[in-house]
Amino acid sequence: MSHEIFRQFSSRIARFVGLSWTFVLAVSLVGGWVTGGLLHGFSDTWLLVMNTFCSVTTFLVVFIIQNTQNRHTREMQLKLDELIKSQRAARNDLLGMEEFTDKELDALQKDFQELSREFADRRKEIIAERLLKEKSQPFLSRLKESVLPTKNAR
Image (cartoon, rainbow, N blue to C red; front, top):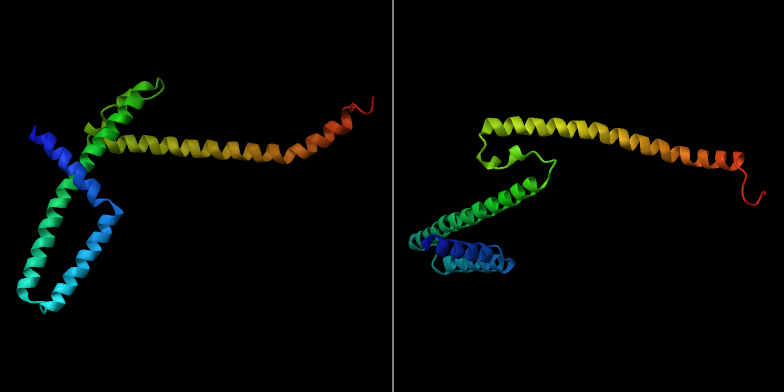
């Protein structure tokens, strides 16, 4: 029960902190902070209160945002797992890869880098073939017109 209350609370706070007008509010607070400092002569008490307020707020917001980020990462991983599971050609051994060790992830990354290089080489071949085909099209058209009789010539 308390976990669910914290989840809802952290989601709301993270949404609030991420709004554009919250940034405007923060800039206004900084302006008020500077103005208060000017009025109080930037006294030690003023500095202590402001620094404590900023530190505590930052400390708490970091934990709230991290909670929300962890939740979003988990949701994204589950969605990816579902997509992998639904594809017949997909490597189902990737399901649950969030539990892989760093060594396993490094090996997997090397596999995908190799696949990427192979695909890049094949992509270059495909582009070269298309360019060659496009360059030869006008020639083939002229050749076809000169060799094959047209409908008007009959």
